[in-house]
Amino acid sequence: MEARFEFTDAWDVAAPVDAVATALTDLEHYPRWWPQVRAVAKLGPDTAWVCCRSALPYTLDLVLDAVTRTPPVVEVALGGDLEGFARFTLTPTDGGTRLDFAQAVTVTGLLALASYVGRPVLSWNHRRMMAGCREGLASAVAG
View (tube, rainbow, N blue to C red):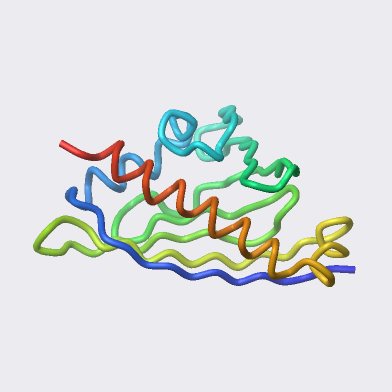
């Protein structure tokens, strides 16, 4: 059993593209500014283990592999509890950077089963996760 999720979002940050890209590609420091990222361990030059937990009492165990670290696109392949990708497209604006976020993942096992009953709750949980990203990233690159 599997289920597929796709998410998109867009927002602006008052910082230049290079500063935003630097923060997004520095996975080891995500826990400093992204509250839902609980732990990160570097597994290799382009690979990291990431432990995430949003509002629901479930911790995601992920492996992220860098696809591209160079703006305008910052993308990782996701493995572990989620299989797919997460991508930020960075565009300069007069006030800083516009971030266009896209994620497509497949889940299996208990998460897939939960999605048949609780898809709206899982989507809400993801929105809470991304709200933490928006607020934390803006704070991390401010000034």
